[in-house]
Length: 124
Figure (cartoon, rainbow, N blue to C red):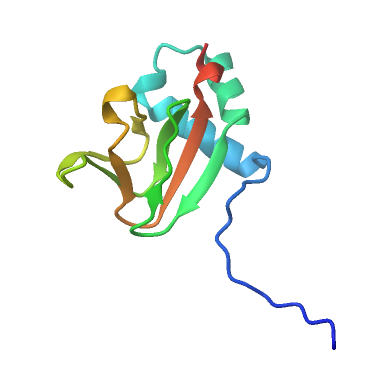
């Protein structure tokens, strides 16, 4: 029997360390987001250097964790409740997350999107 390696398509599920170009983009997005207005420039830079960047395609559901903060870098994300009613739309530089009351909500990409993920403990 021959050694056979099968290639299987997969979506990137982990992100490499943010490169300099991406870091510049992440810092620009943080500066545009009103959520980060009260943060110092140094803190924004620190956060931008230590975030995950994940790309999604249209109709992907974002696996949202209560310990993270999500920032739309590109694209549009829709928040829907358990009845599939639209609660909110999030565009570039807008922030979303979940809490105990919104655990059942789904966050769906309306088009190809790039999302920054920040651990909540990095915001302290």
